[in-house]
Amino acid sequence: MGQMVGRMPDTWDGLLEEKDRVLYWSGEVLSRVADNVNQENSLLIEYSDESIDKKIDSWMESNQARVDRIFSKHPDLPEAYKVEVANELAQIREECRLRIRNDYYRGYKDVRKFTKRVDALGDRQRKVHVKLQHLECVCNRNMKKFQKKFGPLRVKTFRNLEIGERIMFQDKRLKSQFGKRVYDIDHKNVEECAKCVDKLIKIIEKTALK
Image 1 (cartoon, rainbow, N blue to C red):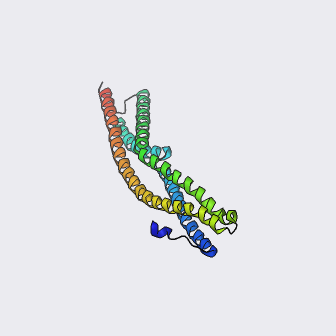
Image 2 (tube, rainbow, N blue to C red):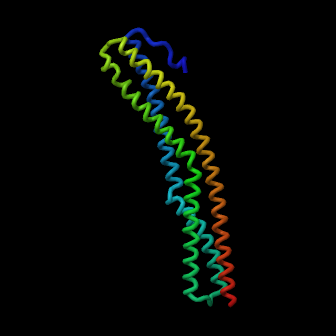
């Protein structure tokens, strides 16, 4: 980090040139924060209630087909009973939906905490960025005043840049871990859903034999 900060220039033109360099790196910090926010939004869309509903609809479609095959073997079952079975399937679907939502929410906990850290970094750097942009005007060619105000802003920018680099590495790791958790969550819930339908099919078959 020390090499990036470098020595403080001792001419006005040198200070302005250094300020532009620091502003560039400040923009890089803000850009990385914005990228994280965009990725976060994409991730939330991918695992939103709508996405969960589509996933469960797909699972229940195959389970509905299993139930329909049983009904085709027993055409004498009354329509009223078939309505009861449809209600049972709807309940299985809703219970599965609630389970998977809660599992995703718990699995996403670490990513949520991490996102708050990224947001805080962005807030800090935005304040620094605004001060850097107005520095020339505020100091009005007063070199000592400029250097005094510029020094801490420069240090904060490069410190935040370093933090941002570490954060981006952690971001990839956390999202990779979450992806693995989602796979396990889906696998567990699709099996649980199938087991519930298995029990329902056994009940249907027993009812058909009465």
